Length: 125
Image 1 (cartoon, helix red, strand yellow):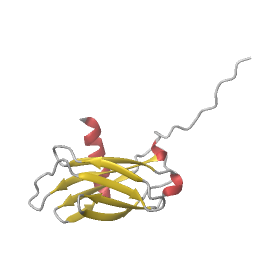
Image 2 (tube, rainbow, N blue to C red):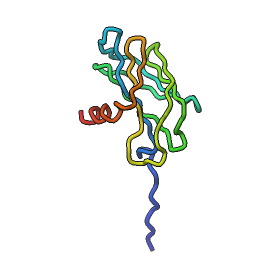
Image 3 (spheres, rainbow, N blue to C red):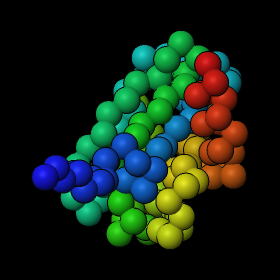
Image 4 (cartoon, rainbow, N blue to C red):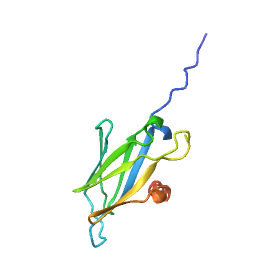
């Protein structure tokens, strides 16, 4: 008799990740390439690393599950830092979860409303 394996939940599923993406630019709006970007989970201290590309763009994919909604995350690009909160609907297992944070000179700016379009543009490349 053969038994089929039970379906396992893979960590690449949308409900196991939270993506932070955006641009790093200087005070004059010039893209900064090669800037180290780090996202740290305040709850665990676990760190996720990234780096800006030639256009100043970065993407960091973290492992956050449904239970992590509302968790504080420390985002750093170079010397700039910002605390963000992982806002998402834990019951939604279809829509990508994340936010967009741009570092514009000395001013980090979170625009969560731009996340979906920015992610779609990145994935289309």
